Image 1 (cartoon, rainbow, N blue to C red):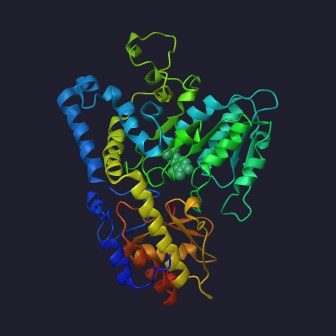
Image 2 (cartoon, rainbow, N blue to C red):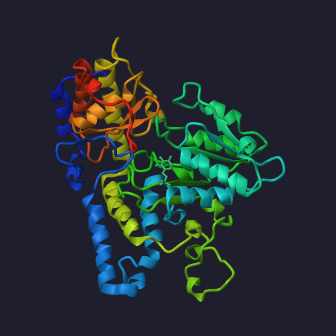
Image 3 (cartoon, helix red, strand yellow):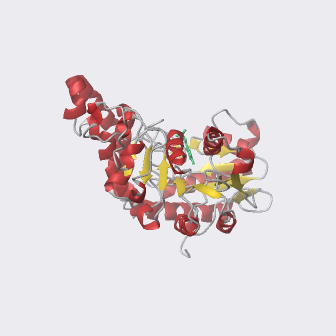
Length: 429
Ligand SMILES: *Cc1c(COP(=O)(O)O)cnc(C)c1O
């Protein structure tokens, strides 16, 4: 974009023309804070809180009658909210359900789609993915009497930051029984080519699923068009559902007949769930992958916040996200990537290869720069070994925020302010 420039007035001008600016008051931005950590925990959403309080009040007013008389009935709350969420991931209504937690859903889904047969018994993942996913896949293999040392194949990264899709495809062999990949890498922010990888997996008859925790709510997905087999994601990052909020999962309708690996009574055919029959009859849609009674209070925040995302529109959100990250990377290049500064950008520059955050690297002082930013009321986060993640979230961040963050970072370097902080990272960075 030729017309970008480094003056503050320019940022303010962009904010003045921003169609999503109206959504910022729908969130509580802590006082004197520039919040760049919505990729880790989305900010308090007034709509989320209102829905939580509404459901709490239903409990107060209705007691057990809430299961059928709530609005929507609690009995259908997970499916009903899943149907809303389907719109932001390009799925039909019965392919998405609000349930469980991210890693639990990984177990439930990967366990169902992993059907090792003879030599075809390996799971393909990557070495940059979120560690929980690797722990879970290792456990899954062991539970089937297999050995993660040989049967969990991890695609290696050449630069320690990004993955090459061709390397992943090369590892899809006749021995691969399942592929699980992240949509967006949690450190560098690289967005993988979900459509292309799915096509390659299917050419080889391998089921493929995606962990979309780092993309849901900020990147557009078209799961049905891309024909992915399954996906799951958390709701407390760009979806603003609140800390530890209930997660979501997607199952392609082609796979509705697959037997859930961790069956539970809430995955039962809803019409007959209360017959209490001892033989499991799955619901015949994504709802079959539920296990337990819905966690209503943790679900309500997701539903409330989802209304904001739907109102704003996921394509408008993605558009603004790309503009904010483009602008941020431009400013970083202009102001911070200079001899003697030690900064770099680990995030791919191409719009179709990046998610919602920018990974600013520093050769030596990422921890201290991160701490110095926090001291100034700017909230990024540090990820080992050298990354400061900056997520300008479209629903509540501004171009001026981006400008302030980059200029503050420059000032922290110029004045040596970072030297006043410890280089030991905190427990929760
Ligand atoms: C945040 C995140 C998770 C979180 O897992 P939980 O089970 O919700 O704690 C999992 N995978 C990825 C890629 C994430 O970014």
